[in-house]
Image (cartoon, rainbow, N blue to C red):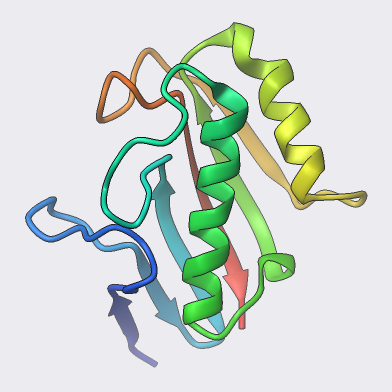
Length: 128
């Protein structure tokens, strides 16, 4: 079985950035880390962890929807935060989009992401 690299049109373009938003292998979808960029590539929620987290979730939902899956089909996530003080705001945004039982999630604090304005990046795996 081979995999397929996907470039969804429902989110910002990755042209020239050296990566793709998603890959499909069988009935699984693997999403690259998503950040708080809108469809035109503009940062949403500068300095606001809740706004950025909600934009990231919206991007994930848009990609999954375009590829024939659902936000509810997420089976695993990895979350990167740049500021420990943002943990509570991230959790508040998370509870707006998920309910118990939450999908498995690894949470890491990192010194920085690809752009200094990014506060959160989330990658995930979902099934079709």
